[in-house]
Image (cartoon, rainbow, N blue to C red; front, side, top):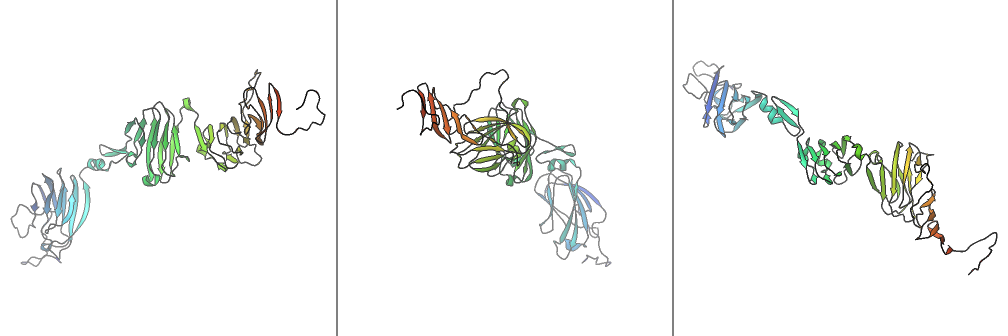
Length: 412
């Protein structure tokens, strides 16, 4: 449907190629410049508009008075947004400061009509850059650039979504820092953490999430890393290890069965095993060369703790409860690194217990020698004392069998 002249029958183009630049301090109602009608507020095809205050409306003329395809390019050259509306007051488009919008009539069967919209963008790219700059980005002139703002932490902290791309620097002593649920952050969130303090910084996960395959990550003084969320867990990139604190400790609870360490767990030189055993435990390490200090602090309950690579034919190490050992792994075997210093004249043992003798056998850790009390030497067989030696003599538990006979003394 087109609007035709009653005099010529031809289609009227009310807004021919024309330009207007005007300012408005109140709502403005435009009209089509039809048949030379005199009005200051006519609709031009190109209009540059300045709104001197907020909340103003620019009314377009009735769509039924012109043809489909009638158009106007409206550019907001002021500092306030304004709204372009139909003749009935319904919104066509809101135009922000510095933005240009192209509108055109697609249906003129009603006074309000139907209008199409094409965004022409801004007059300069600087406002766009500033608007688009979110977390991790900063507008520099007309471009977006990476940004990792730094803030100092002096007490325990829980990370959140707004810590994306932020740099958190720990400035206290010992501190604990908690990561939120990975599922809530999504696959691309990251933050940067630096321990610039004087004590250990521990980053903990939430729920069943893991960081580098463990429930926590330790940062010694001067250590740092990018902490990145995968959507279901966390990984660190660029984890810097302070050579002053080169050794990390893994405290691993165990109870029974086979326990396979992750690469992250096996990367801890000092390993401490805790828990109350309900069965024999075998800890499987990756087949890689390394040096370990293993401390067995479990409640044994008659069960053993075995260290192994799990490779057939490899040599395993059994660590008695309450004791520790320095082991060398050559990628297949675990070998005892303890030795006698050159020129040494003595070897000292821990006291041990009847259940875990200080000197025992790899295949039978509850059989060996120990120190029951002051001035006593004991022999334990399968966790039971069978012989006690002190300054008064020898006490044997149970019966004795002497194939060569017994001589001297008085027997009671």
